[in-house]
Length: 394
Image 1: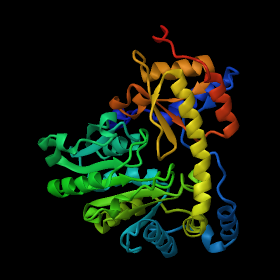
Image 2: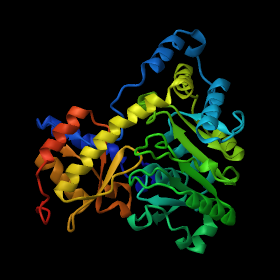
Image 3: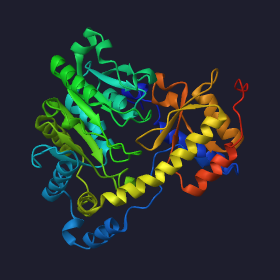
Image 4: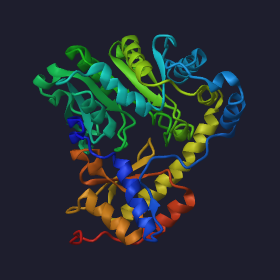
C-alpha cells in the first residue's frame, strides 16, 4: 500500500523518539534519569481527583459529551480568565474546551490554512505548530528566536512577500523551550503586524501560571485589539499537574472559536464530562497559595539544575517561567552530540535543541518535572564533571 505523501515531511514526534531511546537503555540495564519530557511528576490535587470520583458515578456523564463542552465548563474558563487576566469572554462564543491544548493547536491549522498558504512559525518552537500546518497542506516560514533578542521574533525582518501570503502567526510565551518572556510592547507589535497583514495570531500560553521570582505572565488577550485577531491556547495540564487528564481550552476571537469548534465537532466527540467537572474544580477552587507552593518545588529544582550546568561549563539563563532550562552547548558541540554524551556516560537524558528547529541547534533542554530524589541523583552524576573540549568520535 502507498501512504499519503504528506507524511514524507512529518518526522517522528520528538518525545516519542526520546521515550524509545530511554526504553532501549533501560533494557540494557542502565538506570536512566530523564530530564527530557515536561510531564509534571507531582500528583493532581486531591480535591480535583475527588470531583472526578464523585461525577464519574453520575450516569449522564457516561454518555457522549458535546464537542463544545458543558455550558458550565465554558463559564468556568471565562470566569478564570476574568479573575486571572481581567479579560472578559463570552462563554458561548469566545471559549471552546479542548482535549488538551495540543489537540486544538493541531486542529486550528485546518481552520486557517489552505494548500500553499503560509504559517509564520517560531524556531525553536513546539513541533505541533509546523506539523499542523503541513497536515493542512500549508508551508512554514520559520522565524528565528535568538538569545540576543530575548527569544522574541523579529517581526520587522519577515519579508513582505511572506507576510502577504501568511494566514497565521504562531507565538508562545512564556516560551518553550527557551524560557523567553513576552513584553507588553511585543504583544502590541504583534497586534499591529496581524492587522496590517490580515492574519490570525495563535498564542500558545500553557506556562503562564508556572512562574518564579515574582514574575506574573500576561495573556496576549489583555493587549488592546488582540481579540480582533487572536486566539489563545491554554490548559490545566501544567498549572494543576493534570497532563494525563487531557483538558485544555481555546479562547478569543469568536470567528476563530466557531471555526475550531466546527472542525472539532466533525473529528472528535468532546471531553468526557467527568473530566470537565475536574477542570471546573481546578479552575474555580484551587487556591493561588497551592499554585505558588507547586511552583516553589520547580523553582528549587531550577536553581539546582542551573547551578550544576554552569559548573559543567554550560551557559545558562535562569528562567523566570516554564518547566525547562535551556542551556547553550560548549563551542564545537552539537545538541545531539552533547545529549548522546550525557546519556552514554552518565545515564542522563536531555532533549537536543535541534528537535525544536534549526535555530535550536547549539542548545539542550532540561525539564524540571523529575522527582526531587531523581533530580538529585542525576545532578550527582554530573557534579564536578567538565564537558570535554571536543565531542568524542562516534
